[in-house]
Amino acid sequence: MKTAVIYWSGTGNTAEMAKAVAEGAGAEATPVSNFTESISGFDAIAFGCPAMGDEQLEEAEFEPFFAGIENELSGKRVALFGSYDWGTGDWMHTWEERVRSDGAILIDEGYITNLDANETELGELRELGKKLAEV
Image (tube, rainbow, N blue to C red; front, side):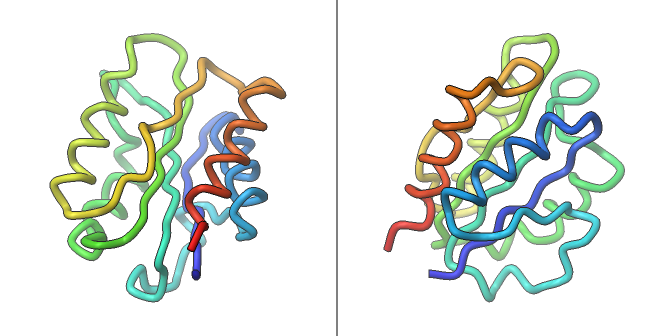
Protein backbone atom coordinates (compact mmCIF):
# COMPACT_ATOMS: atom_id res chain seq x y z
CA MET A 1 0.00 0.00 0.00
CA LYS A 2 1.51 3.32 -1.05
CA THR A 3 1.12 5.90 1.71
CA ALA A 4 1.71 9.66 1.81
CA VAL A 5 1.95 11.97 4.83
CA ILE A 6 1.37 15.58 3.79
CA TYR A 7 1.34 18.47 6.23
CA TRP A 8 1.63 22.20 6.86
CA SER A 9 3.29 23.49 10.01
CA GLY A 10 3.93 27.05 11.15
CA THR A 11 5.62 26.41 14.50
CA GLY A 12 6.91 22.86 14.08
CA ASN A 13 4.23 21.16 16.21
CA THR A 14 2.39 19.61 13.27
CA ALA A 15 5.71 18.75 11.60
CA GLU A 16 6.66 16.63 14.63
CA MET A 17 3.26 14.96 14.50
CA ALA A 18 3.75 14.24 10.79
CA LYS A 19 7.11 12.61 11.44
CA ALA A 20 5.50 10.27 13.99
CA VAL A 21 2.64 9.34 11.65
CA ALA A 22 5.12 8.75 8.82
CA GLU A 23 7.31 6.58 11.03
CA GLY A 24 4.34 4.39 11.89
CA ALA A 25 3.21 4.21 8.27
CA GLY A 26 6.66 3.47 6.86
CA ALA A 27 6.41 6.62 4.74
CA GLU A 28 8.02 10.04 4.51
CA ALA A 29 6.50 13.21 5.93
CA THR A 30 6.31 15.85 3.20
CA PRO A 31 5.48 19.53 3.70
CA VAL A 32 2.58 20.50 1.45
CA SER A 33 4.80 23.02 -0.35
CA ASN A 34 7.15 20.17 -1.39
CA PHE A 35 4.50 17.63 -2.41
CA THR A 36 4.68 17.25 -6.18
CA GLU A 37 3.22 13.79 -6.80
CA SER A 38 -0.31 12.96 -7.87
CA ILE A 39 -2.72 11.94 -5.11
CA SER A 40 -4.06 9.27 -7.46
CA GLY A 41 -0.85 7.27 -6.96
CA PHE A 42 -1.51 6.74 -3.25
CA ASP A 43 -3.79 4.26 -1.50
CA ALA A 44 -3.59 5.94 1.91
CA ILE A 45 -2.92 9.55 2.84
CA ALA A 46 -2.44 11.31 6.16
CA PHE A 47 -3.03 15.05 6.15
CA GLY A 48 -1.77 17.32 8.91
CA CYS A 49 -2.70 20.95 9.48
CA PRO A 50 -3.04 23.03 12.66
CA ALA A 51 -6.05 25.14 13.53
CA MET A 52 -5.61 28.67 12.28
CA GLY A 53 -7.54 31.89 12.87
CA ASP A 54 -11.17 31.08 13.55
CA GLU A 55 -10.51 27.31 13.74
CA GLN A 56 -9.88 26.70 10.06
CA LEU A 57 -7.22 25.11 7.88
CA GLU A 58 -4.20 27.25 6.99
CA GLU A 59 -5.40 29.43 4.09
CA ALA A 60 -2.32 30.36 2.04
CA GLU A 61 -0.86 26.92 1.24
CA PHE A 62 -2.77 24.05 2.80
CA GLU A 63 -6.39 24.95 2.04
CA PRO A 64 -5.76 25.65 -1.68
CA PHE A 65 -3.82 22.38 -1.97
CA PHE A 66 -6.50 20.38 -0.17
CA ALA A 67 -9.34 21.96 -2.16
CA GLY A 68 -7.49 21.05 -5.33
CA ILE A 69 -7.14 17.34 -4.51
CA GLU A 70 -10.18 16.52 -2.39
CA ASN A 71 -12.17 15.30 -5.41
CA GLU A 72 -9.51 12.56 -5.76
CA LEU A 73 -9.99 11.14 -2.24
CA SER A 74 -12.97 8.89 -2.92
CA GLY A 75 -12.20 5.34 -1.80
CA LYS A 76 -8.80 6.24 -0.33
CA ARG A 77 -7.84 5.59 3.29
CA VAL A 78 -7.34 8.94 5.03
CA ALA A 79 -6.08 10.05 8.45
CA LEU A 80 -6.19 13.64 9.73
CA PHE A 81 -4.10 15.27 12.45
CA GLY A 82 -3.10 18.69 13.71
CA SER A 83 -2.40 20.89 16.69
CA TYR A 84 -4.13 23.90 18.17
CA ASP A 85 -3.51 26.51 20.84
CA TRP A 86 -7.06 27.53 21.71
CA GLY A 87 -10.63 26.64 20.81
CA THR A 88 -12.54 23.39 20.94
CA GLY A 89 -11.33 21.44 17.92
CA ASP A 90 -14.16 22.52 15.64
CA TRP A 91 -11.78 22.78 12.68
CA MET A 92 -11.05 19.07 12.93
CA HIS A 93 -14.72 18.08 13.09
CA THR A 94 -15.44 20.23 10.02
CA TRP A 95 -12.46 18.71 8.21
CA GLU A 96 -13.59 15.16 9.07
CA GLU A 97 -17.03 15.82 7.62
CA ARG A 98 -15.51 17.33 4.51
CA VAL A 99 -13.32 14.24 3.96
CA ARG A 100 -16.25 11.88 4.51
CA SER A 101 -18.39 13.82 2.03
CA ASP A 102 -15.56 13.44 -0.50
CA GLY A 103 -16.01 9.66 -0.27
CA ALA A 104 -12.76 8.95 1.55
CA ILE A 105 -12.45 6.21 4.15
CA LEU A 106 -11.58 8.07 7.33
CA ILE A 107 -9.74 5.44 9.37
CA ASP A 108 -10.19 7.14 12.74
CA GLU A 109 -11.25 10.43 14.26
CA GLY A 110 -8.88 13.29 13.51
CA TYR A 111 -6.04 13.40 16.02
CA ILE A 112 -5.44 16.73 17.72
CA THR A 113 -2.97 17.93 20.32
CA ASN A 114 -2.81 21.13 22.29
CA LEU A 115 0.41 22.75 21.08
CA ASP A 116 3.29 20.24 20.88
CA ALA A 117 2.70 16.50 21.21
CA ASN A 118 4.12 14.72 24.24
CA GLU A 119 5.76 11.27 24.06
CA THR A 120 2.47 9.47 24.69
CA GLU A 121 0.75 11.40 21.91
CA LEU A 122 3.66 10.80 19.52
CA GLY A 123 3.28 7.07 20.23
CA GLU A 124 -0.42 7.28 19.45
CA LEU A 125 0.39 9.09 16.22
CA ARG A 126 2.80 6.30 15.25
CA GLU A 127 -0.05 3.85 15.85
CA LEU A 128 -2.32 6.00 13.68
CA GLY A 129 0.28 5.75 10.92
CA LYS A 130 0.42 1.95 11.29
CA LYS A 131 -3.36 1.74 11.14
CA LEU A 132 -3.43 3.96 8.04
CA ALA A 133 -0.94 1.78 6.17
CA GLU A 134 -2.54 -1.57 7.07
CA VAL A 135 -3.45 -3.61 4.02
